[in-house]
Amino acid sequence: MEIADEPGLPPDEIIVGRLRAGDEAMFARLLDAWSGGLLRAARAYVGSHESAEDVVQDTWLAVLRGVDRFEGRSSLRTWVYRILVNTAKTRGVKEGRTVPTASVTGPTVDPARFQGPAEPHPGHWRSFPAVWPSVEGEIEARELQAYVQSAVADLPPRQRIVITMRDVDGYDAEDVCAMLEISAANQRVLLHRARATVRGRLEEYFSGL
Image (cartoon, rainbow, N blue to C red; front, side, top):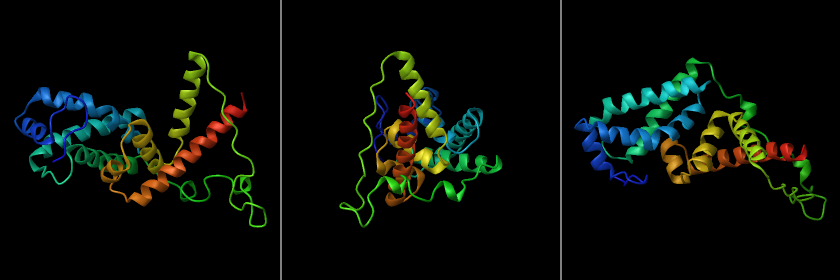
């Protein structure tokens, strides 16, 4: 088993042993360490914060019921996230949340912004993106943060969960692939598209200042 990387948590085998023994204090520590990230991941699949909270609660119940069957083939955290994703997907289907094909295909940046085959540097920027102005003041910072959160919330679910886990929660690519059970290539594409879309929204934001 891998060692849990959150500060203060013991190795997986100790956590699992304590959970199997009904150690409520150990369970409370896991709740504190992982519930925030689980909630953000769930929000990528369901229609409201309240639904996401229900998914997280159902996930923890499933963890407690299934911890005796945990075999350590992955890290404990990965196992918990897989339960969360499956639970969230099921609830998302019930809520009628689908991903339109158009939302995950097509170019991530307008092709007209790049030089064409007959130009001196095909595929290169016609002009580099403008440098964004610095944000000054607490009010502007909060406004920008809310704008970024809105841009992420508008992404298709698969892109939203990948950018959230990578850029908000700080998980590395290998962890994300394991938790979501996707290939490294798929993870890269989803992350690239998500970042490109959010960057485009930020360009719109700063151009209006």
